[in-house]
Amino acid sequence: PPTVAALGSMSGMQFPGALVSLSNNLSTGAVSPPRNSSGAGSNNNTENEEPPHPSYSQVSSPQQNNSGNENDDDDEDDPIDVTAEEPPSRPEYRNNNSVFPPEHFYPQVQETVYETAARLLFMAVKWAKNLPSFALLPFRDQVILLEECWAELFILNAVQWCLPLDPNPLFCVANHVVSGSNSRHIAVDVRILNDIYQRYRTVAVDAAEFAYLKAIVIFRAETRGLKDPLQVENLQDQAQVMLCSHARTRSPNQGTRFGRLLLMIPLLKNVPTHRVEHIFFQKTIGNTPMEKVLCDMYKN
Image (cartoon, rainbow, N blue to C red; front, side, top):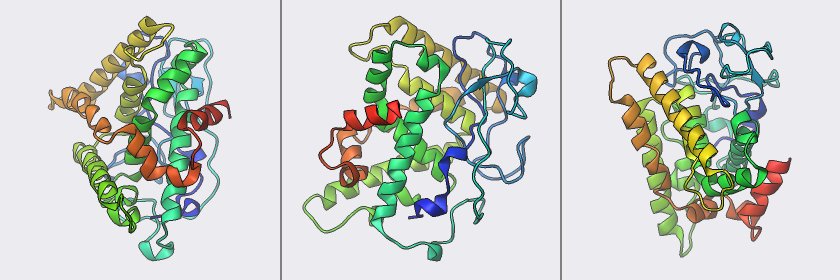
């Protein structure tokens, strides 16, 4: 698997597309062009586009979305624009439109898989924290929702970050299985995760669709203990409407794309949360409860 240094700082990654905070504006012009997961063609971004960023920090008008660098505080109902600080400079290693270095560049050690997994989880938590519509919820609701869906957000982040690689180094059995009584069970789970990855890769989910899918995953009104489940339900409905609008605009000849994307969400639960924690995080967090880890990440 690639080292963390080779992957570069993920704090500079950018998402084209985002979720409206509390708006009913579903204009597709308000969403920046998605990153082409196949690497073909071009869009309004620079040629060597950085992978998506989970940070949603500013609001701008549709005319400003292509630049993603200007604020427009007057247009509060416009979708969240993609804005981020300039990423630190790092060498580019591109092979089949991938930013990963060639295999001989990095050592084949398991520790890099766990380090990368920890970074991806941190990105998922940061994405949720910086989502304005999420931040408007009661704090306790934010914590409950994050504890409920962190594994699915992590898997979506891992899938998105590794596209279009095949095989995905994070979901490669050889990078996880060692001799031991649990090796067979781990191998089965990792293969299931790889099947999920291949499904998303085949459908060619773009960055905007990933953002909407994450929002649908995190805004679950049926989660127990919520103080304001109606608001959570409204936000999930809004995310679904925006996903539908984007799918129709992107693929007008694929009337079933929206339904196909929704049906891919349950796949994220094919590996239970506690097994995802065991595979990717047990060696890094030890006996620390995942709830405490998430809370510390969220506060930071």
